Image: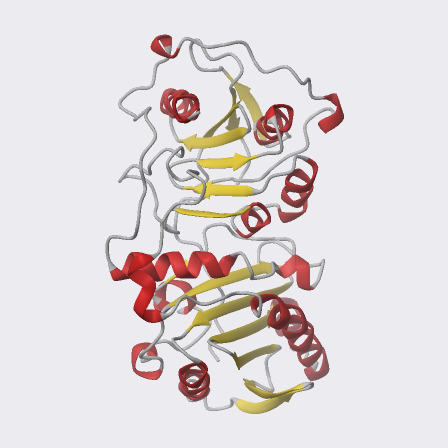
Length: 396
């Protein structure tokens, strides 16, 4: 396996949810006062919902299939509650193995080893921030059938095994079908396990033990088995789309993407636009603990991510609660002015120390929907959230 860490190279969008004053019981049941959309400053951003139909090409179909899979992939915190430090700048949905896995797995001949690969979903987190603990990565990859998945698992492990001369194969307790190896002088392990149409690649890397030059093989085996115990049963609930029907997949779900602002070309494209079950949002947010609490308390059942994030909550009051949490302040944020003629929107400025972090964020709600936008310019963030509000109103 490759003994290199995952590095974020893109500007970071801080999608951390925070707990605002009061809980869902304290949110008023009344909707915010009506807004005259004609008075909003929306810049050049669209305000009418889109009709998002079937995929336009095979790659879009592969992306949608990978997004469908994401609803069944546990987060690292579901596997072990210590793994709560996520990095939303790491791609979760991927077709390009180099972009998603190139820092942790040998992928120089990925296409040759896995020629029938359809798409994949990556779940990752660490026990501590800034490479001070253990990193966990689970990459679930889709193939046309079980035979091709098994062949790909074998070939991918063989490719990665040859990357370092001191790699040694190791058996995962309880999973005789898993193919795994580790480096005896490093606290790291990689495992490939084929199950049905899927291949689960599991990787652990203990920065602290490596720094201290300590090795604990049993700890690695226990973590890998614990991960597989959780993820195998969960992804078994996923029903793959036949590879011949990928072009029939729909890009939207319940009109969520249609009412979400499209992504400007100048924004970073880490993951493709997508719609997910509410709890799947935890994969994309930097604080899965607070996110899980928000999702459960406000009954979020759907989440869309494009040029904004849109959450569908239980009701109007719950959507306002989501807006308040997304727009809430902590010691890393200070309040910014609300957009002109949209006083219910909440805007804030990031004043923390994280490098490359986007500076301004705004949240808003309408009906059952709450939205979150970001920009490095306050006026642009205000225009984005105003346009997003108009989209929600016009889609009603």
